[in-house]
Image (cartoon, rainbow, N blue to C red):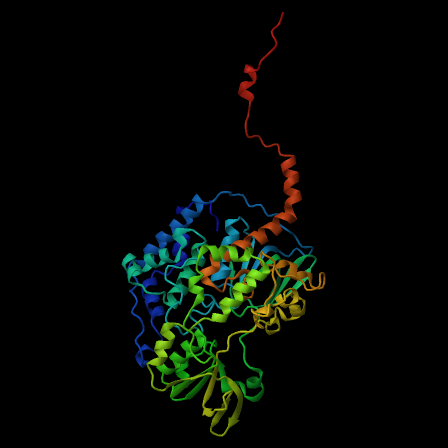
Length: 530
């Protein structure tokens, strides 16, 4: 993205990256899959894209680039290029993850004139993140006016995109964002900013190479970078959690993750048990019911559904900006209290399930055992109940164990955790939060033993693992704007410190003329003669 280039000259590039049939394509994209075959509640009716949405979006893209020209002080790129003895290119920053937070991180780097950046995502283009893959919710749960990826640029804000596509009246009619429209916004954001995203790029390892990070990619040549950002989402520090006894006792064909990108219509006429009661689990249960499952039973550990969402109260600039500056003891008191509330399912998710008489909520019970029997799969609850099902879905959240990710597993024992530095007070205990990585204020990993894994000194955590240190991360849209500030400060400071001596030398010897006094030579005072 060249913020100082002529905006009008870029119009041809804009036309080349946007589909002129955009309105019709987006309308199809927002349509709920298998609508005609569904029963239950009717999905929200969204405003139709304007017929001239393509042209309006072109105009908005040009306005974004014009706005960035206006804001382009300071203009100069300042990071000195690095070389490698092999001649291989060295990136200043490599961002792993091309969803909403990875794209925002790249834009933030560009704004600070760090432009030798690459974004890597293992998914095909347009399928980054959950929005059109495994998500089964109708809308985002965030308020429609939420911002974040725009980093304070109004023309780049989600609302600006929505009004360009659906009109100002469409925005007024909108309740919450359709998840597919959000993906379309992110697709446009990437194109409007001309961000360097490489798709189908699966990072499998990080290794130190003379102070650089070597990123191993599955099926591609490795890359070198000075700094790395992990923008890998909610499960980015571990993996989706499956109780070990399920893996041990059942074949993989007997169970499915709620976060697998599968079509629920495949389980028509089947009796389903689902373990877990987070928002994703409820959305999957609703989707299964609407598409003809014989029955769905959610097993929920808690005795009743969560109703209060403390996160909504904390969407305040004071908390979002200053949590990271508090002491460890105060951070812990806050985050442990917030997580005690938990996060309830969405109202849509609950209402969609409640519309079906063949839905059952088995509260106050997890699973103690599972067994493959002739009639199907026998599930024994922790309350002693026993019932047989045709298939199981698992929605137990995610682990915070780096061993669950190929790229982090070799580093797992070297990452400093909260349990290594902080003693939990008796009245604020949480055996899961204490396993989160203990990060610097700028979200950099810390080695448990200095020198044992030096590559960690160049890797920054902007996935859900940053939550205890920073309260919000790239996996949280509401906190993205604030969390990214610490990250950008840390990375640009590290790059500056490495180059500072060069910049000081240039400054000390600076001779470029700013003011030329030649025309004053005839006006200089001279001592009178005689």
